[in-house]
Length: 311
Image (tube, rainbow, N blue to C red; front, side, top):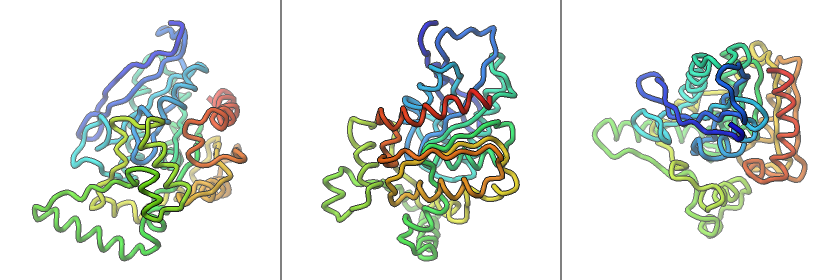
C-alpha cells in the first residue's frame, strides 16, 4: 500500500452504530503496531469535511492511523431524533472511538491521541480531561460550545433562550414537529442582506454552503429543543486539575464571533499540562484553518512533530 487508504467502518455506540472513516498510512502493514489519533469534526459538520479530508488525511500521510467519526444523531451515524448536539454525547463519541481503536491489533493502545476542529476541538479537550487513555491532544481553532450557546447563539440572553428551548420541547412532546433549524444563512449574499457582519458566520457560510466544503452530510442543522443540555456545559471544566496530557492549541489571530481566539488562550492558561503549546496563525481566521493551504500547512508543521514526540 503506497498511498493513504480510507476504510469505511462502523462500531457500536450507546444504542446505535457509529459510522467512521479509518485513514491508513502509506505502506500500511497489519503486522505492525501504529500510533493512532481520533479526529472530531465541528458542530454541524461531518467526517468528510475538515476533520477528515484535511487533518485526518494529512496525519495519515505522516504515518498515523486516524479515525474520524460522524457524531451520534448526525451524518451517517445512528441515533434519533436527528441533529441533536449534546456535548456529553459528543464527548462520549470520542470515548467510543478510542474503544474501537483499542480493539484493532495494529493500534498500540498506549499511543492514542486526539485532534478536533472548532466545536470538535473543545470536545477533544474535554474528552482528554475525562479520559486519560488519550495521551496527547490538539485543538484546531477550538470553540467551547457551552460558552457559545450561552452567549452568541443566545444573543447574550441565556435565560430567555433556555426558556424557549423548554417550550419547544414541550410542544414536541405533545406531538408537534421537531424544531430543526439551520445554523447558517443559505448563502453569503443572503447573510449580508439579513445584516450579518460577523466574519465567522459569513466565512462558515462560504465554507459549508459552496463547493469549497459542502458535503451531503454537512447539514449545519441543530435540533434546538434538545440543545438545553449544552447551556449548562463547559468544555474546560476541571482542566486545572485533570488536564495533564501534552496539549497543543492552534488558533488564528483574526477573531470572530464564535470565539476560538479567546477560548484558545483560556484553555492554554487553565490546563494543568506541563507540556502545552499555543500556535497562533498570524493573519488567518477560524475558517481559513479548515482547509486553506497556507494556514493548514502552518498548523501541520507544528501538529505533526507534536504527535510524533508525544505518541
